[in-house]
Image (cartoon, rainbow, N blue to C red; front, side, top):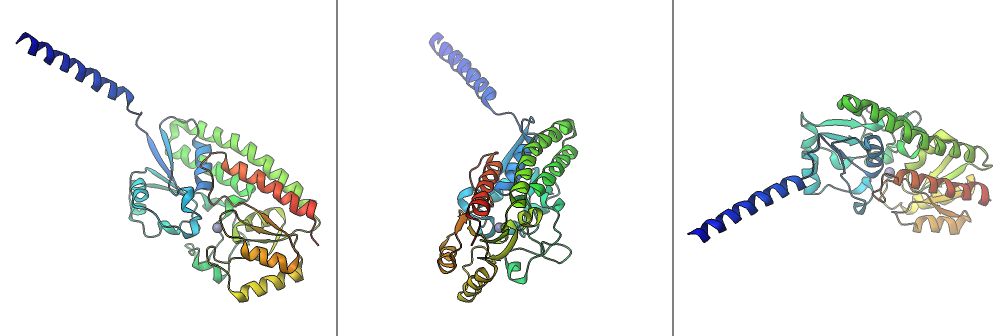
Length: 314
Ligand SMILES: [Zn+2]
């Protein structure tokens, strides 16, 4: 009887110890669960919310799912969205995978569309591209890739910090401080792009898809042609013939491909025209690292430098 009592006491003691241990090991409850749709939106959200207690930022679309233009969401990603307090998305039709998602209609979900502050002037896109990007509420179609211009990324960063400051006023100052810290780093990119492109004798380029139009408009490059009007759909034989003709006539300095798309069309056009091929990364996907945007853009700056100043066109 005494032995039974001792065993019971030991078991009780172990239970209390174990329960206590599991309680202390449980992670602190997030005050704000934030879901960012794609990598460039996640990096900016991470930078703005860095170090703020209780803010848990998750990335919805993983890099191995490819470009946001041609993916669909998994069941697990749908569940992640349902648990979110805040959804940070680009908008302007980039996230077609969210179209008609019932979670977006939830009263408890705050939605922040960062591209709503991007300067879209002159960035309407042709009918061919409308298959890939929905019309906005005013009924015209605009290019969604604002983040590819550091100048637009700066505007988006400050505005995103203001939105978080409104949602979570206790830490308003810290969100804005984070934004300003990031802006200092974005601004050095901004000046370098400006300086490089200003001194380039030939500013004409060909890009893979319409991802670099904001960069071109803001810094003075001219995109004379694109390889794929609708990213993910291979160009027709007619489009390829027109592309080669345009390259022969306008003599761009380079044909730029992207890391996550095939470069066979660019190589064919290059072989036909003698214009060299380089790789520029629009950061639609890539490593899940808060520094990924800055790293990709510094690398793009170097590539552009090679193409615009070293190569100098023909
Ligand atoms: Zn794109």
